[in-house]
Image (cartoon, helix red, strand yellow):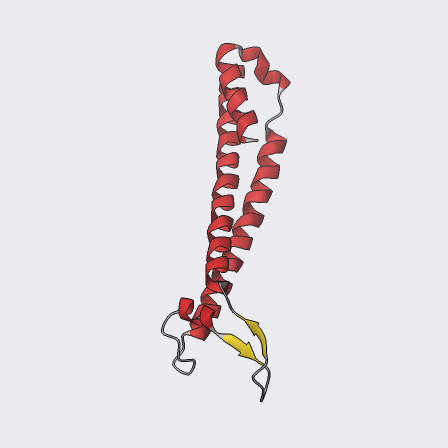
Length: 126
């Protein structure tokens, strides 16, 4: 979509008749819905990650930082058998959080580029 919007802006500078052949408003609506949904997902990931880290670093847990908890191994009740570990959970959730916010930014940029196209098209048709 970003390439399509950039191409349309480029083409409209050379040939204003191209504008009437390309639809803009449906893409603005679709990208706006995508941006809103991605923003909600990013907020959920960030709040969930903060809640998890807050619960892991409270006074009763014994961890000073959330990243310290990823070295924890989970043992079966009253046994030495290891049934799981929390290896790299902090790193993975942190990467997921950053990626979701980057995707949100890209969706917002798509909406902005669509609005720029819409305004340019409207001005050139007047």
